Length: 348
Image (cartoon, rainbow, N blue to C red; front, side):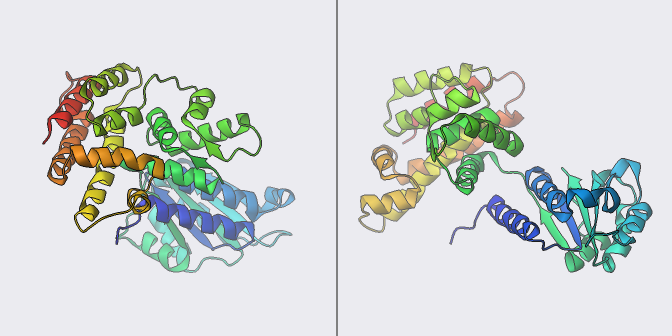
């Protein structure tokens, strides 16, 4: 069984914690950490919003910053009793900058029931070998948010829209991914701006919606490129690749992520087809696409047998590495995309 991407587990944990704090259910200690700040920031903001009523915050809420404080000061504040409120809230932001962070292990061994202590390490992680991390795991709650990889970002966008009660077309998700990269905060901000501009009640988002409301103007998209590659229409594919590569904000890793996803789906379909006949509905389920797109994958399967598809996936990984600096400073991303598409079209 395929393993869920890490971001899905983190998203589920985030939604569970936010739902709990909105109902007044709190852990005495939260350690929010990881290279990707989107989920830790969301949880921290939700706790601050829900832990205390506005009129209770003057006497019961303290926010520290790692560079300006130490473990003894934070622990002392956390041990104080609330004043005319059910709880105290102590937040330590930029905790990775506090030199004595490890010393908070002593407080976390026996945290106050009437205090909610939030430790936010933005873009960093606690040392899992040491007492502080191990103690919070026992007495509190730890959230670790890892970066979403290039090849996962379109899936993350689709999942994020789904959690907002909306559907986003695959080409629209790919276009937004090209624009924002793997910056989840930027994607969330652009999504919120777009929702305000869409008609009330809109539940489906198209590539045209992304272009109009996010400010992207793109003559061709990566989805059009994968389509031409699927049908092995060389001249059109290379024409689109050249236009994509000339765009001011073009970044090869985002293109290779979309290409890898496309050919990996094709590989899964071909592997299943080797076992026997597959109906169109089954193909759509295997591919994770709408039935309309099955014809494109049928064409791709005819043009690229399983062995060729495996070679193409290896090629894409090679060019992804080149796009991240492996090709040296003198080779442009647009040139690399043209090379990659040429090699895909010639793979047998």
